[in-house]
Structure formats: structure tokens, C-alpha cells
Image 1 (cartoon, rainbow, N blue to C red):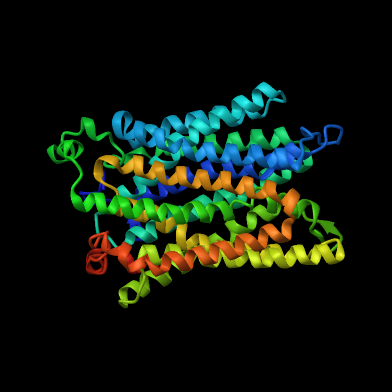
Image 2: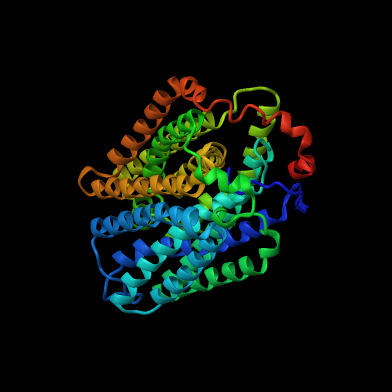
Length: 461
């Protein structure tokens, strides 16, 4: 793993302080991204003559743009990772990505179509530079085989969802009630705060994310020149196969910002004690559940590993897909109720998001950690970029599935997603052992590292 921690680092709650610098940077970046995402589709479909006027697009057109935009956001992680590996290093790439995001979100606050498309373009480039590289830096904080790595990624992932939770409530409310462009502007302010604290926290990231091409360490320079070994090639094969799980997972999960968002707006009875809950607020449920359940799920898997029970990354990811897919059966129930009565209850959405969250905790932070374990040193950021590109293709798939609901109906789409995700997960589970042989024991020594990981007990509490 590139830039692996080789020196004793200052720690807080059993983890390097640098983790929390990256935690808050990603928290504010996700505040800006998910805040904008929470209102994007709603802005596109809002009528042009409404009090809070939007663009008046059809649901199908809005979901098509949403799918393309979210796909490009993550596909740009491939050039973003390549630029970091070849020219800048991860640390500078995160900085430049943050600057692009501040400018992009700020331009979206301008009520002109040129500003709308320009802002989206800058955000796509900014996320592409920041997203794969900040995640790779998290892995670089831990030595190879450190059992704390998975938990560190879960803590980092909670940061992502603190930002997502707050943005859905704050940006969602401001956008729906006071004006869409005020919401877009608020997202830009959040990213500016993230960039500021990232700059101030550089002293805790001195040994992480540097460009290896300029490293004075002969081992780092040599690693950039060597061809891949048989073991490294096998591990890359496993990563690419695991990315199929990623595409399917996000193709289903990202209905949250598209079809499920519109469903909450148009088909759900959102009255609560005489007050109508804003549709965008349902976007915060996933993040809220992650904040409450994140450390518990990570601790469950860590304890399971220490007891010698099955807890490989691939097993977790497969199980996560199956659990998330099961959550869509609740959306099937919601659609069935709507077809019968003309409105569905809010608790169906709550239950769906709960299952989606548990599934996400089993696959997403685990996949990030898995990449830092298996990726060859000289392609660390690039492989992380490929992972995020796969999530981008999943996002585009989500848009296409959402569009199909106009012809097939929500009940058919939700049920079809549930059945396919569960079936595909079971299929991959059948071949799990053969795939894990190709990792050549990348996770086998994590238990032995437990005794060396100082402060791990404190981190559990």
C-alpha cells in the first residue's frame, strides 16, 4: 500500500490524528455534495411558474441528468487517481479537488443556465480529484496487516454521513423553502469550511499522501518501477470481480436520490402531527442510521474476526448487497399500498433506508479498506479511482432504472431490484472461496496484528 505509515504517529481514541483531519474534510465535502444532491432532482422537476421556481423538466429527463451527472462525478476518479499517482500525490490532489468544488458549488448559486452546467462540470472535476485520493490517504495511515484499518475506514465513513445527514436537513430545507439557489450556495460554504480545516491539519499528514516520484525513500522509488508480480495480478483480478458487486449495489442504492426521492415527494403521505415533512429530509435517514450504527457494525465484524469466525471483506460485501436488496421489498409494499389507497405510509421508506444502511455498512467502507489491502503500491490511487468509477456506473444504472418506472411502474421496478440484488449476491457467494484464494492471504495476518495495535481497546469503547 502506498504511503503506508512507517513512523509512530500521535493517536486519538486509538487511531492516528490524521484520520480525524481527513474525517472532517470528507464530512464537509459530503455536506456540499449530498446537500446539492438532495435538491437537484427536486429543482429540475419543480414548475417554472411555482413560487420556488425550478426548471420544469419531466421526471424522466430529470432522472436521466441525475444518472449521468452522478456517474461522471465518480468516473472522473480514474483520471483523478492517475494524476495523483503520476504527478501530484494524493495530498495535493485533495487540495486542488477541494478548490474546484468550492468554485463549482458557488457558481451553482447563480440563477443562469450557463452557471448551472458550469457548476456541475467543476463539481464533477473536483470530486474526481478529491474522492479517490482522500480515501487512499486513510489507508496510508495504517501499517499493512493493522486490524484497526477496517475500523478506521468505518470512522471515516461516519464522517461522510455526518455531512450527508446535516446537508439533507439544512440544505434540503433551505432549498425547498427559501430557494433552490440558496441551497446550492450553502453547499459551497460547507466545502470551503472543509478545505480550510484540511489546510490547517497538514501537520498531522506529513507522512501520508506524498508523491512517491519525489520520495527520498529508495524503496518507494523502486516500487514505482517494478512490474506487477503474480500475487499482485491475482489480487487485482479479485478487486475487479468485487467491483461487479459495487456496480449492482449502487445501481440499486442510488434510487435514494432519484426514484425514491420523487416517490417520497409525490406518492407518500408526509403529514406528521399536522406538519408536512419535506421530501428531501428522507435523504437524511441513511446518514442518520450510519451515524448510530456504524461503530456497532464495525465492532461486530472486528470481534467476529478475533474469534476466528468468517469475516472476510468479500463475505461482508456480498452480505451487504443481499441485505440492501431485501430493503427494496419494503418499497414494493409501499408501492402496493399506493396503488390501493392513493398514498403510502412514511414508515415504508424508513424501513427501506434502515436495511439499505446496514447493507451499505457491510459493503462500502469495507470495499475502501479492501482496495488499500490488495492494490499494488504504484496503482493505489488509480485502483481507488476505478472503484469510484464503478460506483459511477452504478449511479447511471440507477438513473436508467428510475426512468423505467414511468413505463413499468414503481412496484415492478422496486420488486425487480430486490429480487436481482438478492439473487446476484447468492450467486457470488457460491464462488467466494475460490476468489479469496486469489488474495494470497492479504487479510490473514490481521488477527496477529491485534496485539500490536496500541489503543485498540480504547477505540472500541
